[in-house]
Length: 422
Ligand code: GLC
Ligand code: MG
Image (cartoon, rainbow, N blue to C red; front, top):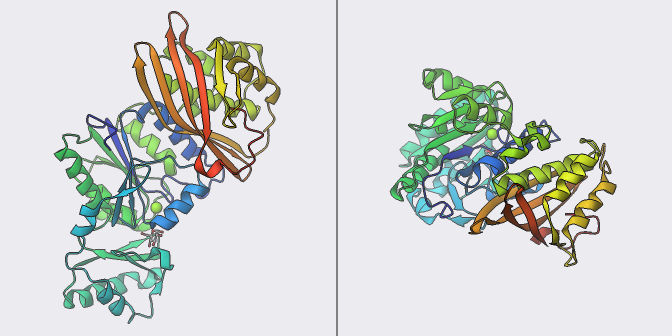
């Protein structure tokens, strides 16, 4: 969070399964639309927070399966674990606060007496979260009985039912809502309370997110029955919470627009980039658009025209160098020129490109260094490169690409890299 020196313009706090991630969309289109919007318009001055019921183990698995961006803050295990940054540094202060009237041994002992409860996988049992599956028809009754028994044993717990099947038991002070309130308080104490916060969710464990004061909320169109019921009973008159018409990440984009929280046109929804050339003054935008163009080029979704090739070459510095992740140095213009022969080579194939953590720094007046992670999914293989691009602003020409350098991401090192272009 130290990345930002002033309050975030927007902080998005989003659930993952069936909210950011649409498990019914094998192409991940709405997620990819959100990703390019975020990197294009928000990454530099806003905060992305993922708030999931998953444990760190299952969260990391999801990151491998889906094209998820890297969040600034990761809240896992239904608001019982908070970590910061890429290296996921845990917030120990938060954990300490959760020990109040909580005893894992007692929770396990009491829940063991209910035959209706089926324990979830071992990875999902956490120091401040005990999770089961329970039939929809039994959920309410079991939760009521259990909460009375635990109270008698001196505990103060919260029982949450999600997705019509999951039952989580947490300390009373835990949960996604409390974790968000804690985060907001922390940011406020640093003088960095976000200008706007948008909470996004689809199921029971997200309900709390929508009762935090001054926070906008979106329940995606595909929200679960238990969340819609909670909303009807508790937050129906709150104009800051909407039920979107669009599914998953599409609903998040819709909410950004409806609440007027900032730009809501994803670069993926723009079909012709040559047309928006004039506004190109931000080097971060340049990179997002280039790699999107690159995806469309190889998928054969843009015309193989001289105009595109010429426009790309014109934005490269003559003599500019490209350092391929293999270490080979090439001419930047030649590399772009080579793209011509790859037009449509991924047509009809599973091929997607996305960028993550695009950050631009002005190193001298008119000179910019943009750092980002570029990812390429081809069939079931995913490879990524840390990329730096040096740009200079040239009078009348806009931004010119001067130097591009790439190095393999940790997980891509051992893969076959011979087909990587840029
Ligand atoms: C995730 C977790 C699970 C939890 C559920 C609802 O699926 O893996 O343990 O019960 O979210 O919070
Ligand atoms: Mg969910």
